[in-house]
Length: 302
Image 1: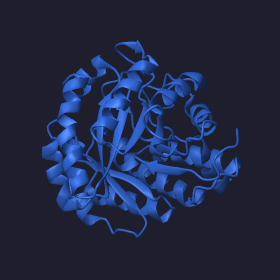
Image 2: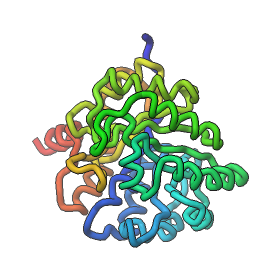
Image 3: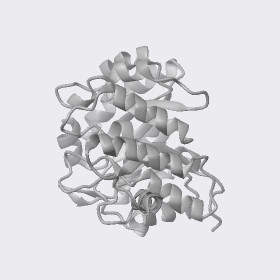
């Protein structure tokens, strides 16, 4: 099958990548990271999350971060809003897109957002309605679409059910996430096929963790299906506090290197992206968790 000629990448590093860092990351650093990402050519950036500081203290400065960004035309800034209270709090920051997040696994839903899948959808419905009434784009993230740390392998039928319910409540885009990184290409394709029963290829994206080194292979498997939108995290930042052993999201640098090699347009300058990853990694006191970034940085100093 012919691969897409261009790919849209959403960098989730500022939100998903940093939310579980134990030491506080100042708002100024988060803002600077967003600026470096958009300078590198990112046009979709997941900035922050309007959640209770009690549960995610790293995101307590959401309003400050959104207020501090020097917005660039053509860039979409998204925020997570798990409930109506979070959505209403986000409005002052003028998000271009909100993200709601649920799970294909019942056990994971209970551990992650303290309610059943059915209850989560009831909670999301008024958020979606309120956002769309204000002309704000709505994306849903479906975690554990391939495997769950508590239930094991997830059947495609569970993915199809969640996708159907999201469509019914008015969600415009569905992100299919392999939260613990256990997916392999065919399993991921089956999950995507289930999601595509309710959303068009233009309204579905992949979100892959590299726990078992399969994220790039899974990305390529989706490209072969015509999927052309993916989440990635600069420097491979991130993990999941409710998924023991799950390592970070696939590194944006690694995805861009692969796409460049395939001749697929991203609009992203890899060298500037590596600089952005080094910036945040230096602040965190560790090396970027990206093979492409490591190779490029080593080459610079050779």
